[in-house]
Length: 185
Image 1 (tube, rainbow, N blue to C red):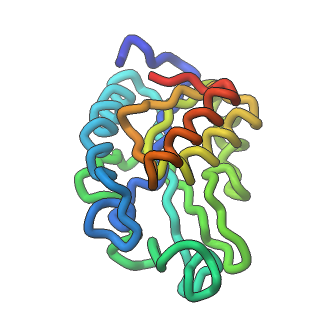
Image 2 (cartoon, one colour; image 1 turned 90 degrees about the horizontal axis):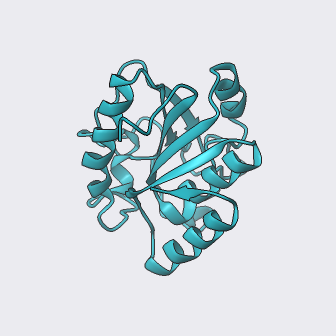
């Protein structure tokens, strides 16, 4: 993988948090299996001096996306809770740029680009191509990579480093990503 990474690239890890892994509040089947794969990519990125960015859901109590408020999801990744933490085995270096999302009371933010300033930061950092993995493939990963393409970034999805909420959702997400020009590795 190190031969693939080059200047102008970045590794973008989407929402690899305790609540999205088995045992969490909104578990994705085999969500924790992305961790060792991503750790290899993190190690390779560090060796090549490629910057690493990591988004995380950071919902206020009573968030609009929660079922109790009419949303589709159970409460998850609530600010300051254990479930909102990155998976404990994910080896993010201290230099990782962290992007909070889902912080608004009035709307959900599936994409790491949605009102976070990420596109501006990536451009300031000279990034042209993103290598992306994380959770969930058919929700936040999908929204993030589609927005990355809209913002003009080349996107490489690390297929082994993502899992969908449902198999059908994963198939549909992969179709949408391919249609948007996302490449799969």
